Each structure stands twice: as C-alpha cells, then as structure tokens.
Image: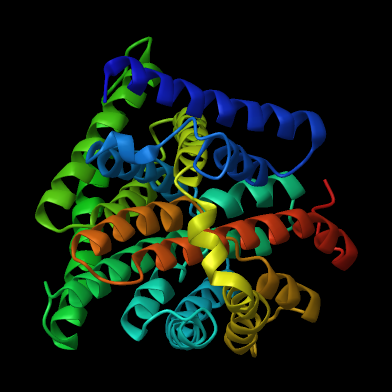
Length: 398
C-alpha cells in the first residue's frame, strides 16, 4: 500500500468519525450509533473508500494500542462506592460469565448456524458489554447512580476477560492449545499476569508523576503516562498475548487513586485522547463489515442477537440481583442496556483473519454475526436507553 493511499485511508476515517461526532452534538443522536453508521458508509458496505485490511499486520498493533488507551481511561475512573455497587458488579460478573457463555454458545449454534467450536469463540467475544459504548451513553443520558457505576464497572472488568477467553478458545480451535486444562491455566495466567504487571506499572507511574513539579507538569505527565502505557501494553503482549488489556485497566486503577498527582487534570486529557481513539476505531472497524457476511445469517442471525438481548442478558441480571437493594425499575434497565463496543469489534476482525489463515470454516459468518450483534445492540439499545430511563424515572435530577 502506497504512503499516499495510507494517508487517504486515515484521513477519510478520522473525518468520518469527526463528522459523526459533530452530527451527534447538533442533533442529540447517540454518538456511538452515528460512528458505527459512518464506518458502514465509508467501508465495504457503502462507498468502499476504506479497506482496513490494507493496514496489514499494523491493524492489530494500532487497534491494540488505542484500545489499551481507552481501557486505561476506564481504569482511571473505575469507582465502586458502597457495598451495593460492589455486590451487584461482582454477582453480575460471576453469573454472566457462566450463564451467558453457555446460553450464547447454544443459541449461536442453533439459531445462527455456527459450528459448535466457532459458536464457543463467538460466545466469548460478545461476553462483555463495551465500556467505550456504555460510558458515553451513561454520560449522555445522565443516568442516576448506582446504575451508571455498575454498567461501567461491568464492562471494564468483563472486557479483558472476554477478550482473553476468546483468544484461548481460538487457540484451542486451531490446535495451539490441547485440552481444557491448558485453556483454564492460560486464562488464569494471562489475566493474573496482566493484572500483576499492570498494578506494578501503575505504581511506578504514580511515583514518577508525583515527582514532576515543573511549570508544564500536566503536559509532561501526559507524555510520561502515554509512554509507560504503550510500553506496558507492548511488554505484556510480548510475554502473554492479550494480557495487555487487563494490565491497562489495572494500571489506570492504581494511577486514579494517587491523591497527589492532579488526577482530575490528567484524566481530562486522557479522556479526550480516548474519545479520539474511539472516533478513529469505530469507523475503521465498521468499514470492514460487508453485506456479504451479514446477509447469509438471515433471520437466524437476527433471532440469535435478539435472544441475546431480551432473554439471556435479562435472565442473568435478574438472577444476579436477587436479594440486592435494587428496585424492579433499576433491575429492568440493567437487564436491557448491554451494547457491545470497540474491543468486541477489534477481536472479531482479528480473529476472523486468524481463522481464515488456519483454514477453519465459518470465519466470515463469525465476523458477520459479531458485527450484527454490535449493530443491533448499539443501534436499538443506544436509541432506546434515554427514553427508557426517562420512562422509569432513572435520570439524575441535576
């Protein structure tokens, strides 16, 4: 690919994302929905101006670094105030981990026609809700506490778990792993190793930031933070693939709790960069979707996603919140809002390439079903979240 063509690809992608952001501000339409539509417009399903695969192996690196930035920003803002929120998040995580995996595995095979092994990979990819989608929605609709905290924390914790589990299932599928024992050991090693390395890197970064006392401290702190974060992600991916995601969340969590480094100012800059990353990534990954991958799924694919939205998620949340001090309206909203986001799209795109290279049948159907899931959850839930919250009286009074 020529440098001129590469520059045009990025120019079109960022312009499309910025245009979607502007249109969201002017119309009040959910920004994530417009970002997704802008990607479809400029990609294979629309004008054909952007082909993400032209980036080659650089696509995986770029996506990984930008996603680590988004998750680090989420870790900075990860708050679990009060026992109710902690209990709700923990129970939702545990129960969804088992119920959603098993139920989605079954319906993806029966309704969407995926082979059992490919359906297992799909169930792990769509396990987590996307903090890159949930957080902007929560902020835009001004959702009252504790629902916003619960939804954001759920996505931040489950996102790395789902990505790591999907990778291990993929390796099991293509023969790089042998047996469930290796899969479980690999899951614990990548999650545990990533968290430990991330906590250590977060502590080192916090200590370094405390010692920066210059007049331009916030700018230097931002540069040091990005340098440590990207180095952290690179080292983790080199040692344990996919461990960079939990490491990014853990590092952000530690830095966000350092009282003497002007976290609010740093967080404001990191958040702007994370929003820019989302503006670039959503159109880029959505551009990779083609109607030829979506159309063969037919009503089976649509019914699979609908079952995921209106049966599996509400059932898991209902079981998880039994006995907790949440009323019916709060439980109803928690059971409804579960859009998938950037990490889901990125994992699907990269895994489809690996499956095709390994000669596994169904790679295109897998990617198509994942993006159909993103389209339907972001589109339907993004458009209905605020009206539903207003109807249920769950908006913040201020």
